[in-house]
Image (tube, rainbow over all chains, first blue to last red):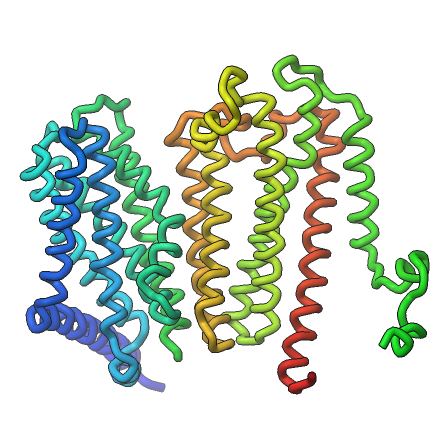
Length: 235
Length: 252
């Protein structure tokens, strides 16, 4: 019989070990981003050219059009930005991860990285929208905050879908097919919620309710990813 | 060729029926569906001017989508079983139930379109022009999401060549998509206005939505269509397992 304190200490060291692995993997993602800058600039150029095309095809959108166009753009950016997170992992490198870490830590690091990435992309997209089509929001900061929340959700869902699609052929187009039906409720919630930033009057407590729904959906996705990813991980 | 089979094949309809593998639930399905069709057309229904006799479509339209959801639930249960055991048989079951569920979903759309053209479509507008406004119905969106998900499920399956990997990846997507589908069915009706009956709570599960006389046919009809769906799926499963065996033994 081992003393309880010893068991507790090994348990604790396991958690510390897992956390170390997680931070190392996360650090690797950011490091890769600074080393392979072409992917990041590629996504930014994608945003810029998309917004430019929209700007040229529509003269002066009203607030509703602005809002829905913004979210559609954000959705397509998400597919492009998140797709690379699994597509860039070569088979050999996955084998290496397999030997050094566990699937749940791996997927958690991917999820958190894409979350941060999508928040940054949202900022770029929003600033470009304001620059080209004018800032139609009544409250800049409110829309920015709602957008951050929404982009987190988009990033989480599409990370899991990228993991699924990376096992199949025609990955990029497959991601859109797999993801669009799943993202509809979140997108509807977001378009509805961001109307508060356009000074639309809501009943008391409704915006808070929408925020809570979005947050709980995000939590559910993280749980599902941690439960399901181990099955994708095995090759 | 025919001569070789002649002795073994049933020669007339009666023999054919006797040769089928009848179990209690298949007989129940036939009895219930016969009741749902005959009773559904003949038994009294509440008289509502805006619905008229089309109210009888409830026995077919609502039941189709009800059965669809039950079959999708069986499919996801099989996917979970597959991930737990790794037996390819569960994967075959999951895809077969999803296939029959999709078929029932399309039938639900067809019966729903008949109903909507009578009740919702603008008489001054051609049917095609009303489509855009009808499709915005939360329940239709929910059903459309379910069908799109399973469409994507079949595309995903066909794009993976390795059998075990296909089974595993599609099982993961099946579970993930199903878990996302339920919040959306719950959320969307609360975001959008609707003309569809059963606005409060979940459609068709509320006792007070349906007249007592109609319940007498409605619940047997749901059971009948579901059992019919399961029956179709079991035939598909048997066929697919035979195909697998044939490929496995390299038989020509």
